[in-house]
Image (cartoon, rainbow, N blue to C red; front, side):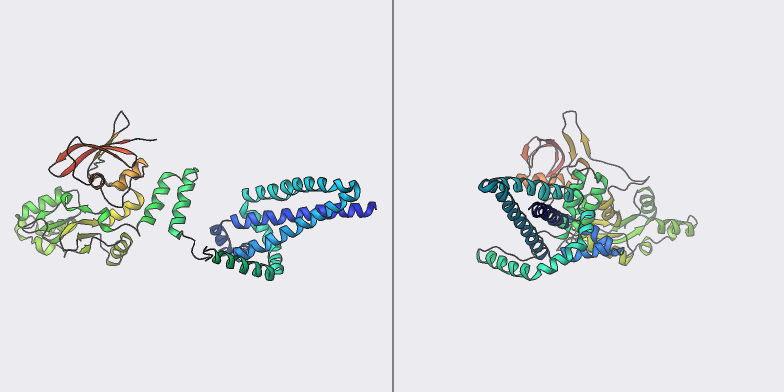
Length: 422
């Protein structure tokens, strides 16, 4: 009698340990980092390869682990009930129910799952070789259960398509980076840089170009001396040449070519033909994705392009530096004229020039103003107000108060922006 009692107790303990194994394995294998496992597989880890195989079919994995977990839990409860009825009679059912509930919850559920969720990758690598044969044994039952579940879901109108997760890889990466930034594991600069890389596919050339109102171009009909003086005094390396109207770009002159021509001319400016120095302008549509434009720059080994709209009118210009700045932030050299256009006030508001891009404001101030419908702060106010506001008018939207401080004709040149919440 005593030997049978001890055997039953040992059996219950073993079954609880198996239950803990199944519970912890389920948590670890579903929470393990797919990216880390993939990296370990590439480095030659056999255990990581086993984890990848198991998690590639999560329905079958969960089915097998849940079958094993329920099997050992029910068997342990049955043994405990039988043992306690023998010892205490009919009241043993109550003791078995209370005792097994506490034992299963504490030692077979909460404890192993807490351990697994805190160390998912290590736990998954440790249990994967033992889980694999269990899944193979329960595979026929798991397949049957999977068919039943998918059929029931289909009957009630729920899609069970594994491929339709609703989240793209880019969104998942972006969400992961933002989450890690909030947790302090990724600094703001790295988050902005990674976000900038992901945004290249979504942004168009028109979102980052220098608008024609801010383009510095030189009249090709000016005397050679005046053109050379303008090139040398400019802070830019490549400058558009126009003839007649500023929109009629006829060439792009490079400051280095002008310097070479000056050296060869030995002071004889009349011998320099600016038209021959100028390169043929390259025009690109304003709807070109930034990622495609970056590839085009690399392929053509060019740094400068003019942006045109659907009617062929020049809208502005874009350089390789403009695209790179979307990734790494502002790039300034000793010749750049730094005009931030954003000034913080004592009351917590900001005075922002109307032509400052919304993306630059979000990146600098860590705001979340929408940039889908408008490129600049002035454009955002006009879009939200559905009109061109007058000087002094103010509006409240997107959690901010916008007040027009300065206006020139139809252009909003300076806007005061006040955050209404922390």
